[in-house]
Length: 154
Image (cartoon, rainbow, N blue to C red; front, top):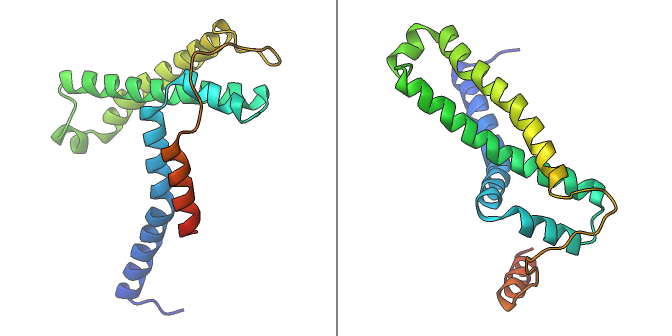
């Protein structure tokens, strides 16, 4: 099989552009959802859609975990910056940088996973029990207009 460099380079560029075009909208939507949705609104909305508790509880725990992971990663990055482990040193000592970034992050994540699970239990998230909420989960006129616009595009 014959590959020219430009053909191989073009294939790699096409591969990455397809991945970006396919995955970027989902990633952006997930990031927006994480930033704008509170946990009580999420749980109330999922209950209103009549999803089983066996699905609602893991989703809410997962959302809390992702938010906490983001905060822990920022804290590890700030600690590395304070110790001068940024920029040029990364290329001089890549294994040390990986060790200083990922070992603390993994330790934080294992603690965070336990904390989030305990938090879900403490908040009364038990399968089969009715929970109260103060969230208002009704669709408004703008929501219906946007749904109709999306259906028109489809």
